[in-house]
Image 1 (cartoon, helix red, strand yellow):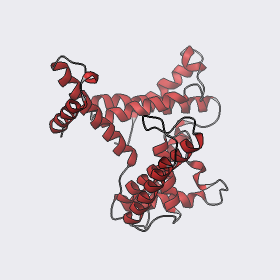
Image 2 (image 1 turned 180 degrees about the horizontal axis):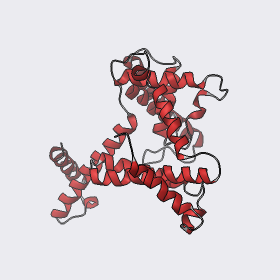
Image 3 (image 1 turned 135 degrees about the vertical axis):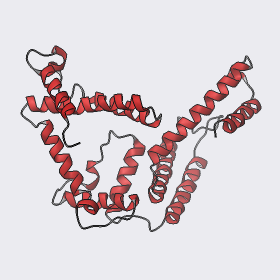
Image 4 (image 1 turned 135 degrees about the horizontal axis):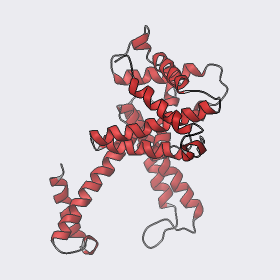
Length: 274
């Protein structure tokens, strides 16, 4: 398709809502007042995608598009930019960051494409004086921050040569975490004492280093750490639900079962959800 009348009609609808005789709520909105909606709708779209719920996905992608068009209309009303400016700029950026398609560069697979993408982004900075990592929002979830930070640093050449080198770093960080824990004061349950603030901070930093190193293992393997952890969380949820259902059939609360029985139910859940 070379024409998109539905998109144009949607843009006109949002413009009508923001018009003087439009919707009072829509007319009152500002960039900041609806900023959180963008995050909420994006997460809901991701949930639909991961659930492979196509109908729901279509609906949630529409909600994400609503946020883009509404923010653009607010900007147009303020004389800042228009939806056409947004589309033009992102189109130019996508062409620029795909030199293997629209230029004379070459990429054999998706991993090489990502490397090209990062290097192109780095070149785009040109004479910009801001730091390399300033473009990574601190509001991102920590795992997402780690992925973007490590990719940007690697694009500058600050990287391990192989995944084995990163594994060596992971093991080094694990040893340092164990040492920090061993030297801390502990409560009877084995947790670091709340009164030992220095030990808590030290162990927390070392744990962060372990996690950051594992993110780099994922990057070297061509995996997405955020997606991997989300998948593991979903897998755990599914197995836990299976355990709860089994306990309910036995007429007991899951939390009332002894450790041995919990292990049996967990093993059954693993076998049933493979």
